[in-house]
Image (cartoon, rainbow, N blue to C red; front, top):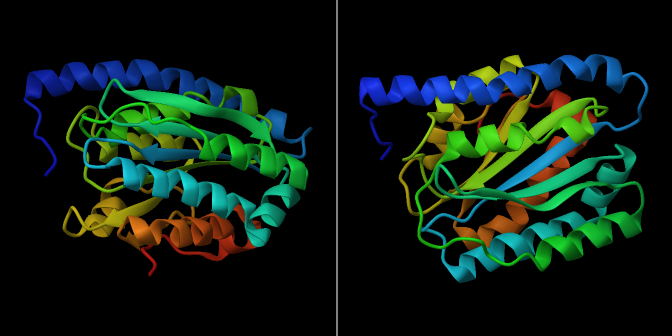
Length: 246
């Protein structure tokens, strides 16, 4: 269940949030000029949940599944066609987010393979902390400056629970959407009732944003593969509706 914040604490928190998001707004202003001169079709940040509800087996399923999805022929071809820039972030509570694989430009099969190998060898960062989706969004969005030339800016958030710490994601997502980001979600159903509906209402945002449910961590590898195909492929991304999809 999402924690309720006392009015005075929430006011201070949102003032801090506005301070962090000022940099995002400045970065967003740079994109229309930069993108005209460059070929990168999408900057894709993959934000992976490593909060306390995710055990080591489930962590391995996420990272191994993500690496396998990147190697999938349809996914790899789409990434190369878009000359995509991709980054991986691990996130947990409000002060625990880190870039574990920094931005890499994927212009060839060897680039994709190098990135996939980096993903599958990332050690886990935390084990016993809360779930701060809003903070993960802020942290991730603030790292797009090196890929300001990319036409589309997508944050791909996966997780198995609702936010219970830090900035409210339902407020952060609206700010980010207004700044030109698309936020898509992969809800890992099992621990939290109606998680996909929560993601639809409180996390995803932007043109053609969507949430895809995985029915447990064992379903994650297939669903992240499908999700990457849908959000990287320009025609599929533009043709989708803002909704959940089975």
